[in-house]
Length: 146
Picture 1 (tube, one colour):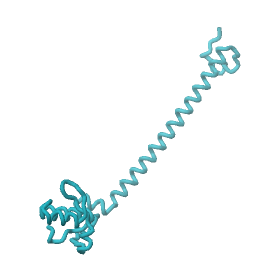
Picture 2 (cartoon, helix red, strand yellow; picture 1 turned 90 degrees about the vertical axis):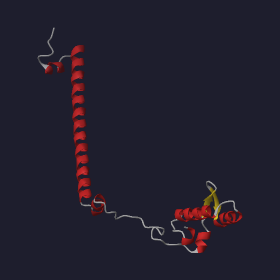
Picture 3 (cartoon, one colour; picture 1 turned 60 degrees about the vertical axis):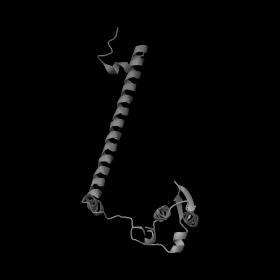
Picture 4 (tube, one colour; picture 1 turned 180 degrees about the horizontal axis):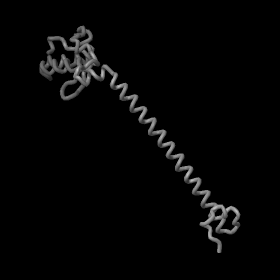
């Protein structure tokens, strides 16, 4: 019987079934080793790219004046609406506003005004509904409604 472990090159000339099986096993092992090496290279490349992205983000964050200001408590990116600026719309715009009364029923300004006049809702409820309706549209309410 031939000892196949002593000389791996002997498999190349050995035409027995065992010799051919050993050659196929060696070829499969070599292919598996190449695949593993390729996977390790791809993983290292991906890790390198992720580290580069992390460095770039850190550099960007470090040099971002707006972000630094936010971290110090200075807000620089406020959205200014006409409401926050205290802009009061003209009465024609107020009358176009839809309001919610009686637990969420949406009606026109005129319908809500009529409801307040006949006593279905109080004047305070009407005023609050108008203030809320204008706020939803980004306006401050006239002083008579506050």
